[in-house]
Image 1 (cartoon, rainbow over the protein chains, first blue to last red):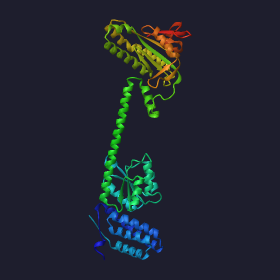
Image 2 (cartoon, rainbow over the protein chains, first blue to last red):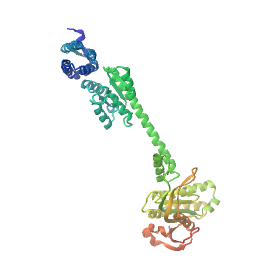
Image 3 (tube, helix red, strand yellow):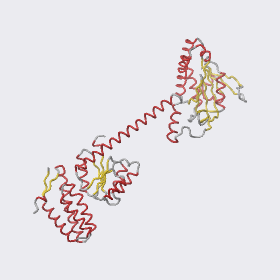
Image 4 (tube, rainbow over the protein chains, first blue to last red):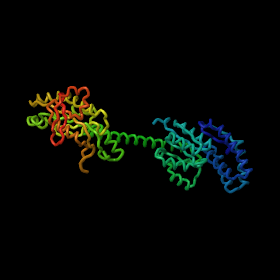
Length: 101
Length: 363
């Protein structure tokens, strides 16, 4: 487990928003997998772009980083890279630990 | 504007971004509203313009650039500040945003402190602009009021209104061509004025005249008459001109009576001061006249010209102190008072071919 990078600190006043945020990320992961299976690179690009914008805004920097890679991978049609990043995203969502302060 | 009254519209199709931005805005004590598409944003803004818009660029349907362009082209919404919130980091997108009229940019991912700082800066600017606009409007109202007040000392208040309306509409007062209309002309003229001026210092005469015209104009305005001329001790008041008054003759009749009653104490005072008995004579006639600007481009006089004015002018010359001479054309205005009329017969009036039926009333 990549301990330090999977720990996220979120502002206390956003605590109420995080459950919905995490639910949406898991739905997003499912959609990414479906899009990859269908080789729908345009949808993958859009999803990556969205992850890039929303992740950091909530304090989940790694979501933004993965989103950036997914957007780039979709642009270049790099299926192997996309598969790896989506796998990494699944691992991250399963293990991420959230602290509030 | 208090903080909760400051409305921020958050436009983003991503529910997480929308919720986050709205939550931060609300956390600052401001009112957050949301829209999930360009079309929804346009409808909401046109229905009730917010004080600030946080606008995502990539939206389903109309994108953020186009929403921004449309709002900035509409006079009703052009002043609403728009912050484009974009994950598009290239300079071409920024240039496009600037061309669309965006007031500021915010990059995704959104940095909370940056968002708060920008919102508060734009809020301060917005408040300042509103305050300046309110001051400008107040100054404009005060200027118009000062103009109206100054004008009202020289011409009838209703004419002032007409001038202000004409100025607002055409940029020129009384731009319309002179019009022909039935009018009722009432003249008032002071008897003994020339002798009075011989006996009193000029400044005292001016003070007396001011008293005299004050009561006469007040009576004229009370019956919605329009003062067209004030020369020496002579006053011309028109009715049904320039504003329609179906009961113009009755108004003129009542105005003459009010004038006669109100001027009495002033005249008594003059008699006491100057030792010369004075009184006011009145002439009243009805008929067609031309109403409008008469004169040259350098000097205009808004007045009434026509037979009714000429007849009333001649009658006031013939009227004795406290007497109202009425042409037959205006007798209807007397109503039941006509019973008190003393017929003076058909009089030949100077400069007029046909004699005129004249009636005398003691006032």
